Image 1 (cartoon, rainbow, N blue to C red):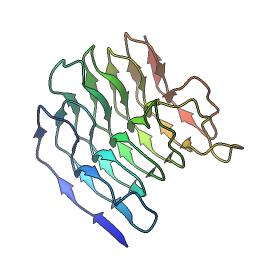
Image 2 (image 1 turned 90 degrees about the vertical axis):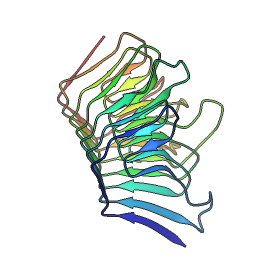
Image 3 (image 1 turned 60 degrees about the horizontal axis):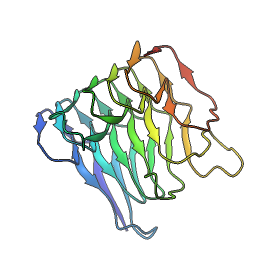
Image 4 (image 1 turned 45 degrees about the vertical axis):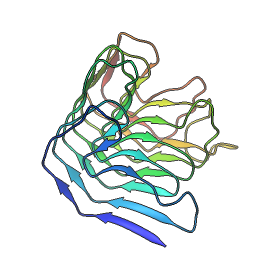
Length: 220
């Protein structure tokens, strides 16, 4: 079984004091089994997304056996309030959870600006996985961010804010089951933060990166 969201457009602003907001889908999952797969393809969002966690220009939360491919976001991503529980904001996907997900070939041109209390902010994906769980075979590849990413919180990256497990990054690395940032690019002028965990591509304790391009700058 396969499910699809294809060639959709959103031009309206989306605002909520809650979580799991996306320009196309708030949460996208297909049943946590390889027998069911789902795809969000060739969609675009131009609306501003404002919420209190797990917010993305295309999908708020992406779960097992699902992919978000070849989409474009030009809408801004914002925090609804300064709530300390708010986290995980991305230009394409706010939060990637569980196993066997893919975020491929997307473009983000929507600026992301977060207040001090907000952590895990990325130009493409806010965060992959949870610190207390082992999730595998998640890929963030061939994406491009051209927007400004700014947060006064922790874990900020122009592509991915945080990969919550200490796994290596790249394409075809031995024993690596998480393939983040293969052939990704950043052409934004800056990512800024007054917190810790700042990266031009991703904040991660142990990192190996293959085939990457960055033309912007990162500033504390």
